[in-house]
Length: 108
Image (cartoon, rainbow, N blue to C red; front, side, top):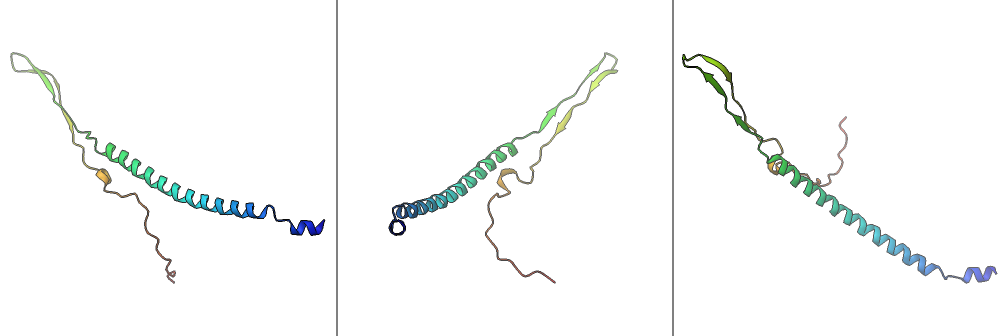
């Protein structure tokens, strides 16, 4: 029975194929998820650009009531707000991965 067990290799080829297929699947999955991450970052950057492009400036004029004698009885003053560009509006800030840099020795 021991001799038959040592000569039996029925499952070896299938196990080696499974390891190879699993390795290729994991490598493909890592590359695919990296591309998904870049796509999601690009889309979120587009959403941020769209929100940053909204102009929130406004202007309201005032009014007042003057009687026949020229006396002002009621007045409301107008208001104005001018929206300025923020730091990362219109894709000024880039969201991408930096290239790897080697470690340097620590300063004493």
